[in-house]
Length: 213
Image 1 (spheres, rainbow, N blue to C red):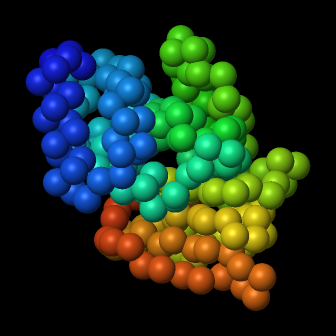
Image 2: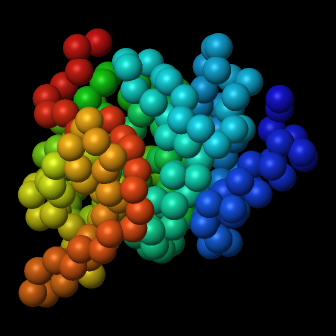
């Protein structure tokens, strides 16, 4: 299946049916071809609403979850965004159409290199990708308007909360890695943080340190 009329229509219909309704998010997800981020055996399933395996034992999230998380983040065109967990690069590419600047970090050097190659091929110039321990964020680029975490932590990581601007939003899956997790939206204000539970999700765990690859 190629990213043509019918595949695109079915893909967008699946997003809307799962609650992705914001025009800007739908338009970004229509412009970024998920097939560009999936290699090999699973490429013909790129437009189905399901997670798929990628290198280093990681996954590319199902499109509806990417859409829901992106929508929950409420990204504006002047925002500087940190993504923790580059993975395939698909989520960062979508964020790049909505934000001024995207910083994305992953503990797997191989994934970062592959994602950078795709960003270059697509002519995306407002993403900076690093190999780093994402649980510590990126202190030298902080504070961030928005932070998106694409791996599950037992609690929203303290260093990431500290790197969020006043008025900033973080979206993060929270819970034990072997159980269903909850997607949480954290909003920082002068007096602290507000936490809002959005929906159940399932993500790989947020692991400290760099990957061995």
